[in-house]
Image (cartoon, rainbow, N blue to C red; front, side, top):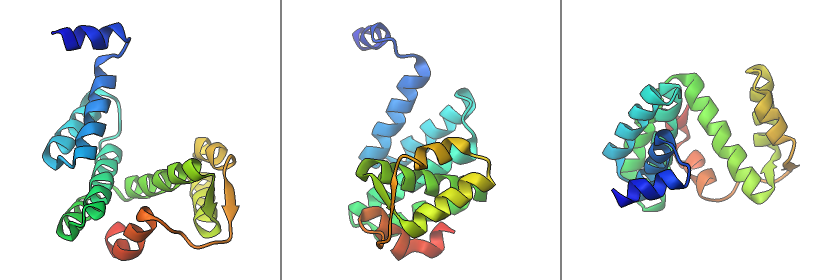
Length: 156
């Protein structure tokens, strides 16, 4: 009960606590719990079901990749592919955008693809966010680039 009072005193509402719980479950790699929380957020929080399930599956796949669990990576990416294609595209671009924001740049090919997607889908919020990062003529590197490279057929 004290925990709930502490949370309420910080001004967090129920959905914020659920979002935090989902993030923690994904970080822990708790797949069943993560998907249950994602389903709940879709039902209660006004989040598009396919979008949140795609994001959950992708982040669990990345966690499994980092932990060296290739079978789990394939399982989560297969679950990702079960979602709406538009959700999969959106989540891929959001992950790239957030990674780029953290480092300040994105490889030119991915940057161009992101902007093309954002304009085509009329996602001007993404256009604005992408405008704050730099485009560089380099290859993609890092953990996410490895997931895309190694498991690309499962991502599209």
